[in-house]
Amino acid sequence: MIDWTTTKERFGYDMHRHLLIECQGDYWHSLDKARRNDRAKFTYMDRYFPEYEIMYIWEHEFYSKDGVLDRLRIKMGADIRVISFEFGDVEIKEVKSSDIRSFLDAYHYIGRGRGGKCFGAFLGGTLIACVVLSSPSRNNGSELFGDNYCEVSRFCIHPAYHKKNFGSWLLSRVLRTLKCDRVVAYTDTTVGHTGILYKANNFKLHHTVPADYWYVGPGFYVMHKQTLYKRARAAHMTESEFAGENSYVKRYGGNKLCFVRDLNAA
Image 1 (spheres, helix red, strand yellow):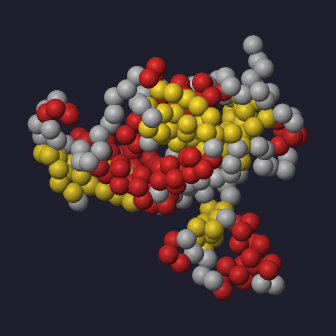
Image 2: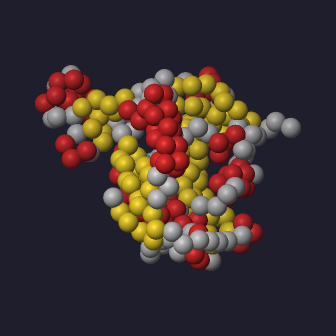
Image 3: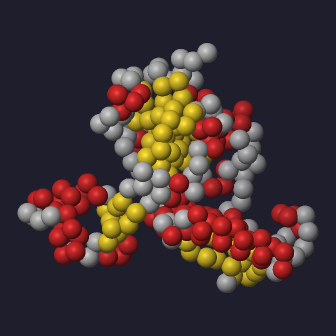
């Protein structure tokens, strides 16, 4: 438990509150029953213990240490503050993947991903957000979406620059520059993403991808199932044998939602 005192300048009133930090497992707390219990817990604390506040930190957030630290600093009003800015002051330009690599490693919950067409949003020369559009990676993509499409593989905003409607505003500007027929985006319900950003930009829910799995090894190192499978084959072992031999545990996530935006639609 962490104690901190709010300031009148920041919140409009003086009040001493206690911060309760709870670490949530991605899988268990994405289940319907757990989500209901978590909501009920918030309501109970709000009603009967207003001097306390609960802050959830999700399992996946620990892969991005800087992001967790910034969330804590913002919550406690220390070292980092939410920056006030106007959308008109933001410059959006295409950048190299190397220009945003460290930004994604610091603030995106799974870090850098595939390369592609990268856009950075800058405020006074400072990178505050980025969007990456990648080439199709799924084998059945052409059957589902045609030949001329791209995928939003990364979308990330610095914690200090989160502002209402900024995400949807940024994405809408990036979409205007694209020459493809349609854009595809996947959201992971395991980490609470439901596609609000995409719905605001007229994306339509196309289909739901069933829950998949990955592996977690010693030291909470996360390995994609394809990576483990390739290493198992190289060692002349089955996937399960390699996982057991090296203390990797299979973990399942939630469903993924696939959203599509037809750029040629009137």
